[in-house]
Length: 467
Image (cartoon, rainbow, N blue to C red; front, side, top):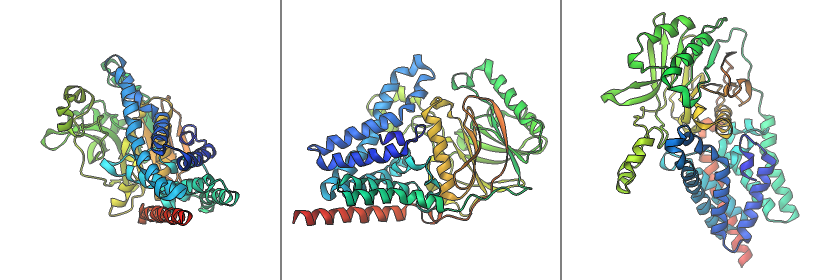
């Protein structure tokens, strides 16, 4: 039930009831540790089932790894639930379990580079509460979800009523946030390109030229635009060998082009990058190298340990050998100003926005979600891009290879989008940024302090009951 609050189902009332039921079970279970572990396994096996999709692109070679990946991923995430729920319930009852789960999810967002996906607060992305993320981010929303669930789980009418009120608070706060500002009449126009190259054909020599020509036709479509944005890894050749390709892009666009590329960096290390092409010859004006790489997809974590257990040949076949860039940075787009490029996986990390010395004008998200099928994976990735907009007060323009390419306003609202599985170009006036948000200034520290206070409250309440 808790998992059904995540995209693409977005049944957030069901999820709220599910979390309340979980916390009620935790304080009544004879074996709470097994209860917590089973709950985590069920939740993440449902929500992250899209993790099997990359192994099915070449099913003959790697399909047998799909169930192993899903079970391993769900178990790894469930361990956080086990630790937080079990310890929290033991020392603080329902309130302690809520605080323990919240703290565990906060830890999961940072430990070993972090994986802040399918958090409790994410169930409210498709609810009226989304704009309230400007104050507390995902963990602030999650605190309301879990505190309300703990009060309902206590099973008494006054506490259950208080829990429902707590659940209503972010919904009311979201409605109270001012609407996103609308574009001015002279706002710059951005064209988002969606070539729709299925992953199993994307690098097939017989199809590469077809997909690139399709993108060029979409780029050259009639209409005045100020910049054209292509998705991740959209250039059909390495940037280092693109002298013939870049002029073709420049002629088609007649405007600066930001495109996802692959290139060799210093010391010959391959990079997943975004390149800004300007002028009639498509001169490379700026480059951003992706700095958050996908484990086992773009790099091999803990290579010495993997080699020691004898899995090095298999892991080397699965993992890329990409090198990470130095960190988040803005690119100055002509006629627009500084924008923050994010490539694929990077859009799930809100903390990277805090590391910028100056606030950008917008976020440009280049991604290739073709790896993750046509159901839950792309839907959840889009939902997290909407959350980044609401947290930061910045518009997000998203160019996705197979979809969903979208224009997201500064409150997380979808202004326009191209659906999954179609080729197209989306022209949109760039939405303005809203004022800087409290979450953008303070990050997750207030949510952390509130969770610690909630845990202390639970411990004190349980101590009074025992005495």
